[in-house]
Image (cartoon, rainbow, N blue to C red; front, side, top):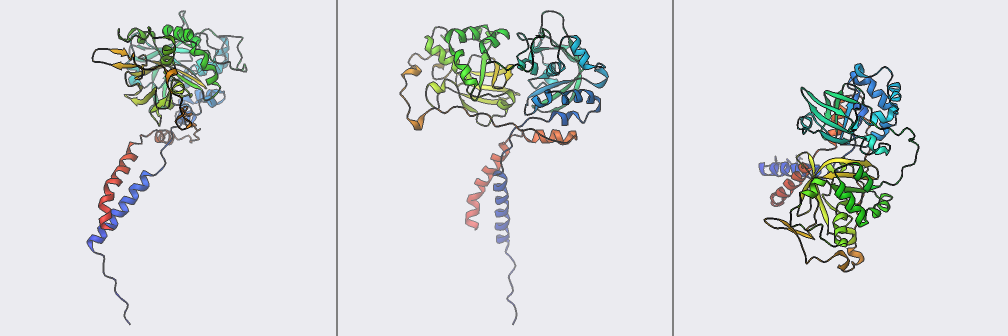
Length: 438
């Protein structure tokens, strides 16, 4: 008995199989877990450059290596072997400094590419370093002033009014875009004004936000408003929880307010709402803000009203972190303070909530009819305000010494997710075409 022959597949059937297979692949790709931003393995990046081996060993043998784990959006000022002193420890000690603090002074808490250095203003740019986070730097002497200098990329020096240590940027070594920029400098930089009685073993005290702003200069208005309103007293309890992130307008930002905004004439309780509107109830370092998953974030003011009100829209735009209130669009201009669980960032404008202010064609005006937060009805448990969740935990990377692999792995964690959404959308568009063919 002859076996029954199976007819060859028709062209239409083959097309249906191909389309179905493509659609299945697209759906599988769209459902892959999204990458989570993580810190960069600095040791793995430096290992590819033998001329930086001495500096890399100094980092690895100090507590600084552990402190860098999980951080992102950094600039590392690395000293080549030929520019290192014969005994770095003795060099630091001669200035009354601890070597670990000197190394922390070479870690800038902001990503600076060569293009950023070329755009520096004539007065330079004040950038916070990892040393500032220890609490041992008087005033803002834990920061560095980066200024353009002739044919070289830049000069890095202490902001102290008296002569201090400085170094010239020799060139760019490598970069993991927006995560780590490595610049070569011609020598170790020692911060000014060391507190010789300070000890690394000293337990950290609660951060005084008002003092941080006063010491950082250019924040006199914000500091005085926080102190007068009593809002600063609310921060200490928040520090013991998920932490806080403060967006501090500069004095220039307050001076640039439109004449009709009436901020200073608001009653004290409404002025306090505006100040709380500048605070997120979680610790977000700059790298986490740059890769934030949910752009709409509740503020400390949200917790005094109801969910969905007094929120900030935080996104990355043109290489900076942008903040949109619905009335004002501002950007983060620099890191003022960053020590878990507190981060303080300078912002270019005063953040005015749309619940209290409105924008007309000519000015921003206070909304007189908006009820104060205390007048809002109590929420039911279902509509109770939700506190901001902590940013995703940053994990250590353990890449090998291969520079290409280390950079590729770090870059892979920060790729935009828009492509995945496009794939999912394409699958949805194909689905109606597939159903008649099945």
